[in-house]
Image (tube, rainbow, N blue to C red):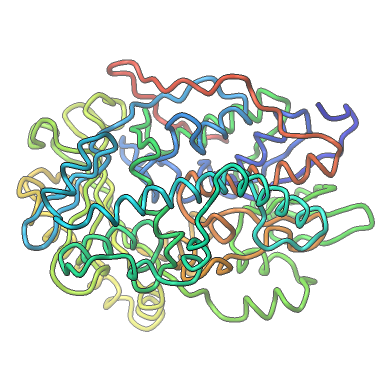
Length: 517
């Protein structure tokens, strides 16, 4: 435990990474204040209420709940005793444009699936799983890949040495830091299409672009414990908020930070609502571009690197209210559906249903679904600024295209829809405070694509812009890494509960995420 006179730490943003850092610090006895602009915690992994329905805003696939997985480490560090969830298998089902259906199983059935659907792919999957275990083992040691202080460099060297001794990786792994995952794929165009589709949602790029080591780990998410959360994805954020409060910290909603400045003893923050706070260490659960907007005196290198918008994707979303009687029993929760043509822009969609057993997510007789497709955010901003009528027409066109794509594999879907709420990248800037609506982090083209965690002494960046990148488990690890770094600066360590949280959800017991005021 830290000293009772430990300085207060302020976290900007109640996304998963910021809450992970705050909860771990609070559990270790450090006074923590989290400031969130919105009324819901979770950022892009929030669950929001609209007309009696609870929709997952962005991230819908929760992984990392297997024993010794990233979210289990988070639970131990935050003092969480149970996750209200059920592990699901298959974790998702992928529908290719030729009609092939590929279930992603986490148990031994996956090998039979690979043999049956993609003969000759077993050597790839053996390499992939072995390589993924190596990277996850390394990431769970919470290393900083781009150290900017002696302490971070020391931690990286220690983590690397411990990992090398324990994992004994092949020297070939060095090549996989730089060569694309496509170099490992068999010469099967259908299989390559399947892998490209999976990588787009897990690494923001295709097999010819994503470096092999990261691609192997991204493809492994179905094996890390995918679960259905009672109340939706935002339940993770809600439990982290409760953990912070239970251990003496505070989380303030509708408090949007609009300026930060360095002081002799740390940092001063101002919110649009007129609050002023002082902090010895500052954790920014923001993108680098969001951080630069708040910090007029940011160093030149940061302002230079954020002078242009980021490379990457936005998301076009559909939030659906469905007639539950029209959904075939046993329909998998997560489905990826492809149409012909370039991936994204409505020709590849990811659909997540609320579980049958979670009846509180929607009014009686309804279930909710979130559908997403990758889209170039620049397109939507140009339309919105140039021609609002054309923007609205494009929203309608994308809505129709996404439903048509999904109906290729789910013919019952159009008839089940009772209400549709579309959303473009503009909404992600408005509600999640993501500049330009850029989501998902950087396409993982090389190991150092992410930003350094420690921007300057005492200011830490967390989220999907730093290693290990996108996904709920990855951003949770980014938050834990910063918590450990701050604790070590205070002469302490992460306080880990002896037992991992239980994974359990009573039948029929959904617990919607409630708004915090």
